[in-house]
Length: 253
Image (cartoon, rainbow, N blue to C red):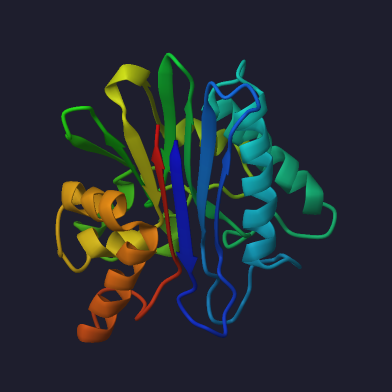
C-alpha cells in the first residue's frame, strides 16, 4: 500500500485550517481516511465561538477518524453524526453553537476492507476513485456549484433547506452527505482533495479529474499543490481567495 499526504496553508502567517489523516488497522485488511476543509470565518471574526477553526477541525477530524476506523458496525454517515455530536459537546457550555458562523468544515471520508470501499462527501471537497482500467470517478457534492450558477452564494444559504451544507454543530447534517459503496475489486486507488487543491481542475482548468489523479499518482500530492500555487501566481484575481489552504491525500489500495 502506498499513502501520501501533503498540505500547505494559503497564507504563511495564518494557521492551516485543513485536516487530513489515515488509519490502518493492525489486522491489515483495510483502512480509513478523513479530510476536512475548515470554513474560514468572516474578517470580523464573529463566530459565537471561543475556539478557532483549527481547534474545530482537529476535534472533528480526530473523532471521525477514530469512529470510521474502529466502528465497522456504523455507517460513515453515523460516524459523522457521532463525531459532530462529540465535538459540539466539547464546547457547548462555552460557545453559541446556534450561530450561523459557528466553526464548521467540509468533509470527505473513505473506508475500505477486502470487500468494499465506502465513501462520504459533504460540501465542496472532492473524492476521486480509480478503477483497474484507469477510469477515474469523482465523487462530488455539487450543491455550491449549482447555487453559484444561479447567482452569488450567500451566508443565508449555509446549512439551510435549498442551500448547501457543512459539518458544524448539528449531527443531522450527516443525512445530507453524498454517500455510496463500491466493490473493492473496482477500486485500485483513491484520492481526497480540499477545494484549495482541487482549484487545479475547478478554477484554473489545467486538466480534468483524470489528469489531476494522474499528477497525484505519478508525482505525488505535493506536486499537485505546487502546480496550484504556480497557477495562482500566474493568474492573480481569479475566483475566490488569492491562495487557499490546500491538502491532498493519495492512497493506492
